Image 1: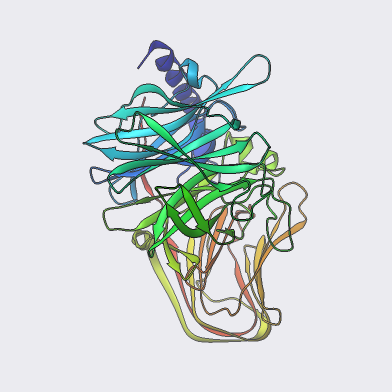
Image 2: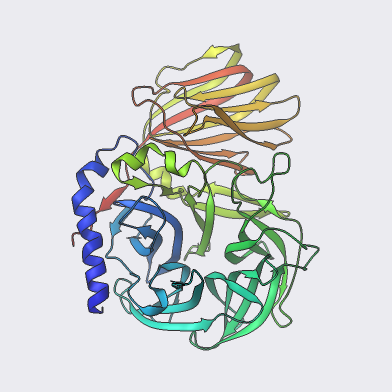
Length: 488
């Protein structure tokens, strides 16, 4: 570690120590989500299982609750329940990354852990430079930077970032999110035999391809995965205009299902589908573990007009990661379900069999809380609407006449209700994860998901049901993640 990097890391931990008590006592801190020890967290990075240990890195600004020069924070775990906060993995200390070690990915090769990331450089004249970089570790904790491995190719602006790397057919491949010189989003493919020398294969999605003449001005955080024999390209396009129930957040995250021809760098795919229907979900990334599962984390937040109104800013922190979700493909639809390890956090089970709601507001003894998992199974809505109100601050509403399902919450800034909606043919199951200031709602075994932050009054733990419906109800209180804090 260079002297400059050592100094940056030291200053970061001084911020952690300075505000630790203030951050830890915030009533909106979450129980079972990974969060920053101070400052701002955004994209998950470098997700990998290395030598049997899960590693979750994340974009981190320890000096402010706004976006700025990014570090890579780092958690590790053997089971995704008991975590260690590891030393800072990357700090923006070198000329090629002086304004931030931006997002990227991690892979294991020949016993070493490789981190690929974008070095961001902002010049005095207001322009920027971008470099794709690599750092290497023998223990998964301490990293040696090797510097830039890819410079900006022709045809793209300096908005060229977020390398995701994987192994296929005896070769390494990388996708990078890009903006073309025409101002449109795209994904570019590279290949390598040694993770150091990379060849540009070409643009595989975006501007002018598969009928996408104009689909956002920048595509971030690409991730090419394999599910049920098909290639799935995850991407986060910026600049999509709202269209009915679609694209109503400032930036979106979704996927294309198709087939990638690695030799010709041609990706034939279907339409774009949003991954999450809620308010706070962006920059998802996946990895495959030793059980063969494709697991996704995302940033449980998004840069928008609400970001400056988060109540947690007063206590010097903002944002978190989603719970980890296993991905499956049904037809051309990605389903998400919480990983089974989260069941280890369950305690104090309350169960009601064969519930019959008659239409009036109903509360169930013991079905209250701040850190809760709810399961509504064998769900049948008789007619009209069915709703669940969470702590008087948010509400899930299913309209069987349309049919569609909506999540409504109070806007952080105005206090007025705001809504996200999607069509759904029928409602048969709900699995809901409530944390102190978050909701993750899995509809019909993960066919649709709503993710949101919300900020109810701390004393309100009510969960109220409305409508004419029948279901079986189980509620568990959920314990806190076990996190061993790093001491600098």
